[in-house]
Image 1 (cartoon, rainbow, N blue to C red):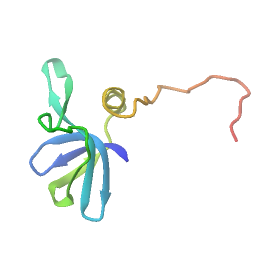
Image 2: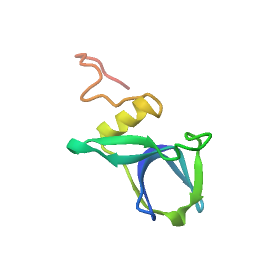
Image 3: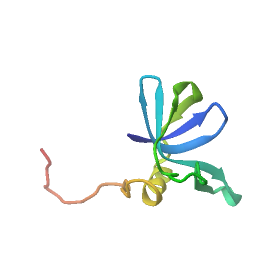
Length: 102
C-alpha cells in the first residue's frame, strides 16, 4: 500500500493507504483533508461514526477520479498520527565520511 490523496467523484479528498485490485479501490485508514484557518489542514477520520473507522473501505474504482502522492510533510503527519509511524527524514540519514553502501 502507498499513502495517497484520493479524489472521489463526490469531491471528497481522502488521505489513506491506497491500493487497486481489478475494479476495486481499497482505502485503509482513510482520513478527510479539511482546510482550517491560517492555511492549515486537519486530518479527520473519514467514517467517524463507524464502529471501525480505521478499517479498509473497498469501493468501485468508478468512484475514484484520481489519486496523487501527498507532500512529504503531509505524508509524515499522516504516518505519525494514523499510519505506520514512519517518517521520511530531511537530507541524508547519516553523514559518515568513507561509508559506502553496496
